[in-house]
Every structure is written in C-alpha cells, then in structure tokens.
Image (cartoon, rainbow, N blue to C red; front, side):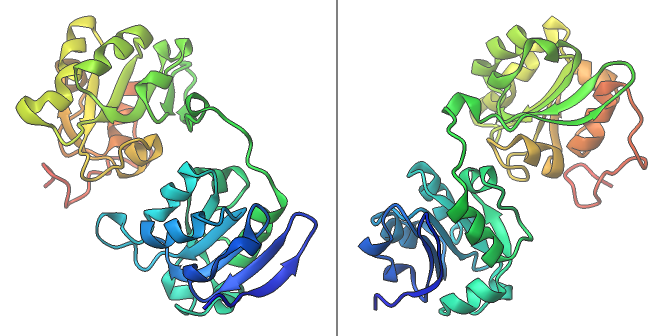
Length: 291
C-alpha cells in the first residue's frame, strides 16, 4: 500500500505510477500526475481527489453500465483535476508502470481536452501534457464546445453546441445541434436565437412527452425542429447529438423538409440546411423507425 514509482520529474512536479488509486497520498498534492491502474469510477476518484494531485489517469474497465467505470472523470472535473482514462485492453490492471508505458487514452474530461489530451494518445504523452500545461481558465458559461460541422455557399452552417442557451445572434441563419432537453423551458431560448432550424434532445421524453413540448411550441414561430433519443446521444454534449443522435420526434416544419423519426441527426441536419447529405442517406438499420 502507498507504493509509488516516479517515472519523470520536472519543474512542475512528477509523473508517478501507482498500482492502485488508493496509493495516491499527500506527496502528490498540487504537483504530480498520478497514473494509477485502478478503474476510474467515483469511488477511486474520491480517494485520489482527497490528495488533490495535478492530474490523474486511470483505466476505463470497459466503461460499464451507466458509464460507472469512467464516472470519476467528471468527479475530477468538478474538483478542478485534469483526468483521463486508458483503454483497459492496452495495459495490465494493477500495474501502474505498465499502464504508463503501454496504455492508450480512451476518454478525457474537459480539463484534459483543454491541455491537448485526446483519445488514441499514448498515456506517457498524455501524462506529460498534464504535467506541463495548465488548462485555460473558463467560466461555466464559456465551456460551450461550439463546433462548426459544415458550412455552405449559401452562408448556412451546421453548428454543434452543448445547449440552446449558447446560441448566438449569427445562428439565425444556422442549423443548431444542441444537447439539452426540449421541454417548455427551452422555448424562450429557441425564440430568442430563432435559428434556421434545430435538433436538441428529447430528454427521455418525460411524462406527457414534456421533453419535446418546446419543439412543438416553436412550430408556430416557423422554426423547424427535431429531437434525438436521449438513450442514444449524450445529454449536455452537442457533438454526441451529431455523432450518435437518432431522430425521435419532429415538428411540422422539420417534417416538411424531409426529416423523419429514425433518421440520423447528421442526415437530418443536412436536410434542415437544405443541402444534400454527403455520401447519401445514412439511416442505420437498427435505429428506431429504421428499415
């Protein structure tokens, strides 16, 4: 217990390897990146966070039901700790040095992304970035993950952002893909931004289909809209709406533009933009409402 192997020492601190998350201790406070070969759930994250290291890398242990094996990433993020997980099939569990030498990053929290850590990166490279770089300071309202997915000669853009609340005045000409529910509390934001069209989450639908009430309400404002199934795309992650989203409901305006239940969010976004889908339609066979 408590054993640590230092594999790098620098001016900011050290990279230390532990066979277990429980081996992190006061030596690591505010200076070290702790590479530990435990799973990355909330329980081990609590033990590591108690000692407030500079960063932490653990294992993803196949993610698990409800993301339980990587849930610690967001626990770390809430505590201001840069964190990532490695693919469990790339390194041995219970062997921190092997994880450092052979592991490959599979998931990151927002703070890790800000210092340049990304999936597919070797753990040793990720740990170095965590040690050498400081994540940019951002208020919660500044972390929008606004990303332009495509733009057209007409001036229309397909834009992803994590919430409709992050829409900008320029989005009046854009198709917005966001990741909050589309209940009635979304209606004022949709009307304020008044995008060309939008795709949000259905929030799991909710009682009386309350999760799509706002989508229906803004039909009267001439705003075509659709929602994606919250079981398929991550809420709070606009890029997941784009990559993982399957349309679960549409309003009349969106239906008139050819958007239908079971379609991928990507295909729906191009239809809402009045553009052809690159490579043709991409409705998955296993999607709800698919063939």
